[in-house]
Image (cartoon, rainbow, N blue to C red; front, top):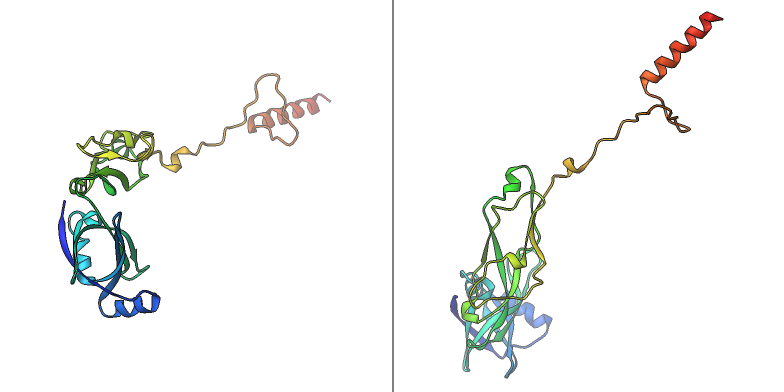
Length: 228
């Protein structure tokens, strides 16, 4: 698990206008709080924050928040507000953590291998890209690898099929599907059945007889006319 340091400046004013001013200076408005810490408004450097959240641990990195003129706190970023279309952060919540106590974290799933069903023409359908786990902060995996190479058409893998990792407890429904291989839609459509009449069966009103029946009827009519 990656542990990084990040400097924070306390004493910022709150409010949307002040937050916009802070962002224009290359800083990101933030707040840090915890079980024994009242919310403390701070601001952090945008570039340094980007670096801290782009280690192998991603957003689950343990961040040592060094508050200017104050305490050094062990935290994790837990509420991350990103700009809807620009690559920038608008606001961050840091939560203090105890490295000896488990936390809940969201961990990405990495699907490994090509499903057997895909090689046979099926369609790979991921249902989840991440799962929630309970684990010590220092033992949060960077990702969870799941081998999907044996999944055939119509098959699926569920949370209960995820690998057992020491110290990691999955917080999802064990029956929840994480991926499946489905039949292509074109193969699901069935051709219309042809109308065939057995001996003694009659056509319903509005139904058309088969060509053979029409020709037979025409021949019978012609023979009857000749007799007359």
